[in-house]
Amino acid sequence: MNIFWSLKKAGYRIQQNLFKFFMSFVTFPVQTVYSNPGDMERIPDILKDKGLDSVFIACSKTVLASGALDTLLSGLKSKSVNYTIFDRIQPNATTDNASDGRKAYRENSCKAILAIGGGSVLDCAKIVGLSVSNPSLTYEDMKRMSAIKKRMPLFIAVPTTAGTGSESTLGAVITNVHTKEKYAVISLHNMCDYVILDETLTLSLPSPITAYTGMDALTHAIEAYISKYATEYTNTEALKAIKLILENLPAAVKNGADTRSRRNMLLASNYAANAFTRAYTGYVHTISHAFGALYNSNHGKTNAAILPLVLRFYGKSVEKKLAEIAVYSGLAKKEDSTAYSAAKLIEHIESLNTAFGITHKIPELKKPDIPLIAKKALAEGNPSYPVPKIMNFYECCGIIEKLLA
Image (cartoon, rainbow, N blue to C red; front, side):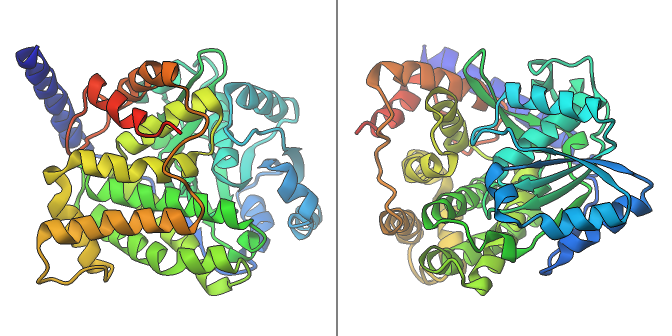
């Protein structure tokens, strides 16, 4: 059994190294990023300049009801740009949501996509875009990067939370309601063309959601930094993100009207996205995805609970990297031992969870479901994610069991 597992792990590493070599020749699409308050007013001109007179607007019911889009919609009308509003997207976006969106896009002869919202809205809109451009693909087909041949229509992303980073990644997470599976659709054709970061859209975000999305961004950055696909660029982006999050998330949670912390969290989320879309995430995300598919749980909240457990499982394989993060973020000193500095970072993550009311247990979890969750998590993670230490089924079950309430 040990020999078989050793050979299997070696096979995973060979596949990962081959993919890393291939990706070293890939040029990522270039985005245009605007990051000042009021930059949403640019959108009608962007569409008009591109000769696009009909846009599909994906948003949440909350954003639509808030009146935050009123000026934008007036601007579209003034430029004679027709729009179709689609607000039927669940907190964990589903394939049914995407199918409904694709139908609305086609029926209204839309030519571009504007997504304004959190990660689920952005991800669902991306899946709509890919399915419009690649009509013969099923959602199962989209699991394979090579199956997606054409890029989305022109896509403008406006995040209203600082966490998922979907606005700047190659991925879109979707839940297949028929197979009870949550997974990431990854493709170079999945990158948004324009990104608008406007902190004023995040000021009304409730404290719990601010905390959950912020911890999601922190998880992205840490998993990217410890990834075996990490590069100098992804490390730089990840460290910037981590430092900004640790310095600004408590303030944003405490006072949602603090524009400085809100702005810094949007920037941090974007930096983290730049890192993990190139270096990938790890088992924290795969386990969290399995939870989300089964229980419709909040992704950022489950990430926060799982993160310390997975980092401790990685042990010595990530100690040096975690110590680097701790020193960079001011949680430890250069002269401190590696083990001490790494432990300080994990303890600080746990203290943030406590401060934000995030327990280290997941109430939805049922013991009989543990094998299924582990199976789905590892099916997503092995060999796709270049984690520092490969996890087997029994190890994964052991970690999940610690989350039982």
